[in-house]
Image (cartoon, rainbow, N blue to C red; front, top):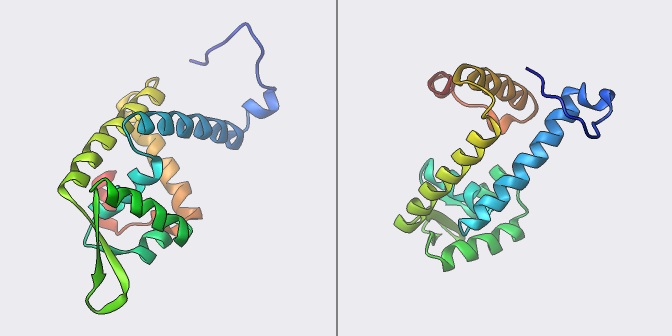
Length: 164
């Protein structure tokens, strides 16, 4: 069902373009997510770093910056803040004293759990009109497009199968 309204509407040319609809919706989702994450005491960047660190062994600062496409100097400030809040720990790499490895602390894992709940609430809010099957189809289509344009989304086949 397509909702109608009595007030001003976007021009049909804009509302019939998947790219415009996706862009506008993406902007609103990001704005809402940023507000909710900040209310939980973190940022979208904090969440991204904590989620990345939760997936594996300690990461180097450079690999975190490259994976998240952050400027390395921006990442240093972000990591400083996470470290001050005892959410991460940085250590010199014993194999290369110029590098630091970064890992989650127990407090970081706990904060990540809280942030995951916030993100799930945002997701549920925006995807409320869709049933579980429609949400899965939407995810699969968006994921396919994302993988086509950004190799960072690509995963081994067994991981993709588990998510599908």
